[in-house]
Image (cartoon, rainbow, N blue to C red):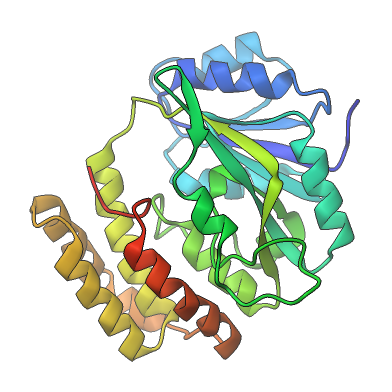
Length: 300
């Protein structure tokens, strides 16, 4: 049965085998969603594999590594009202995509719904450590919201409403990859949209060993600093920056991340726009859980 409401977008870079595993599961879903793969200039034969083995999957090859903005490229091609994001090592459980579409159909002010994440590792399956934080989110919420309100989302486990995603400009090219969701989430919230956690939805994650954890940490620290100064009041941004400086590993990667953030300061000052009060209240509510979080530590 083709549900017809949701397209799945997968971004990938040099993970041919992991992508094959993901596409096997996505193309076997009973709801038969359209699937778009954005190959971020892989050199391991990924694009050829997709074209050869999955003729019904739409393949986009931008010719360079767009990072998270590969999802923006996919969004330009989508004709369904909703877009489900996938990483090349994640996949949606059967019935979750129609359930997410049902939620979005029923709640027209919700822009994004994030699923529960199950991690497959060493032959075992367990909840991702971030899930309890989503489930217990302290962000203030209206009584009609069908789940905990979120201050951000996890792109590899989220279905978005296409219209507000496009209107907000999608993911920022400057942030590229690594915590890229935070800025978009704040801008969606500022525009009056809600982000929600859906306990009844499930995404599976089999973490790829082909990842540069050091580069991801560098980008994550840089992007956290940029977001903080782009959207938070100056006092809060200063405190957040000081907390990061005191708690990240004292090594070359962290030093480079702070240097990257400083290099982008002219852009940040040009683009700085403090979030409206209702968004700032949610961000403040998240500060204490984020400081205590074991799932948000900068390691690698």
